[in-house]
Amino acid sequence: MRAHCGFLFSVLVLGASWVRCKPAQEKKERVQHGKELSDHEHDHSKDFNFDHEAFLGKEEAKTFDQLTPEESQERLGKIVDKIDSNKDGFITGRELRDWITHSQNRYIYENVNKHWVDYDKNVDNAISWEEYKNTTYGYAAGEVEFYDVPDKETYRKMMKRDERRFKQADKNGDQIASREEFTAFLHPEEFDYMQDLVVTETIEDIDKNGDGAVDVHEYIGDMYTPEADEPEPEWVKTERQQFKDHRDLNKDGKMDRSEISHWIHPHDYDHADLEAKHLIYESDKDKDDKLTKREILDNWNMFVGSQATNYGEDLTRRHDEF
Image (cartoon, rainbow, N blue to C red; front, top):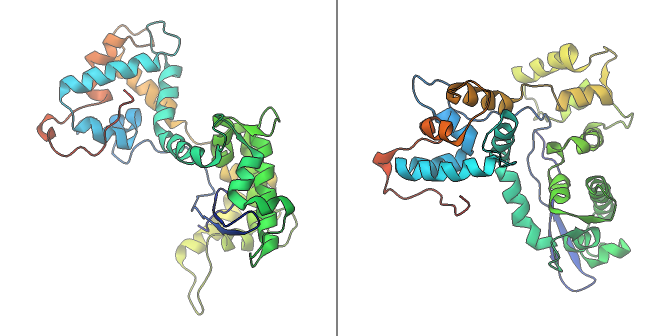
């Protein structure tokens, strides 16, 4: 899949009127399927690895593998206190689903935290458009000059695209992004109110003839650029058929906005919700469709597990957050 530009830039600013910009490209799948929670099989006759990675996230599950059973249970108790958002002593399916979603998206929050300090120049726990623009494109961008940049027009367009996305992410329209709004700016595919903009950006990336739609040639061209005399791979032929059978729903030879939205935001299963229901079913002793802390701790090995025989090996990751 072709790299998606415009999410973030790497910039070197030399003086007030000197800027060199280089797009920092990140490969991104256009189709935002519901994420699989684990690469493991969901087979309890073998182990609970799927549940561990679903509940904790893959990296945190590795940490718990290194703990003794006692340490695992102690940390799990602290996690349960966090999951119980209304502090009523019960974990509902919604609370458990929200926690699983949070665990799966931890990489997003870590990415935002990593870049936050680069942009919050006045350390006021917010990022203005001016702060982002000046840090990303340099102060010369205010004059839209882009000194010493070979393709100035490209960078003007990219800055306008970033500004449009920043304004969309900025819910209250004050040109200042809170941490949540900045997360929506960097990762719009994760936020419902950004989805229409994701469709717009997808069309801009793929629609080469400027008709506001995506035909089969543009669809294939986004994924595959043939080498000279190279025979077309079978998977490309399959994608052509997919376009005909499943992408072009009204059979007019191209995808409009609605069809593109259906393509990149398919209605998959809500994996986090299914896993939450599964964990409750397996641990809910009194069958009241919610869990107490005791019910979770009594079934702790399904939620977090432990490999006591590995304790003492080099830890892959340690956190102070629990």
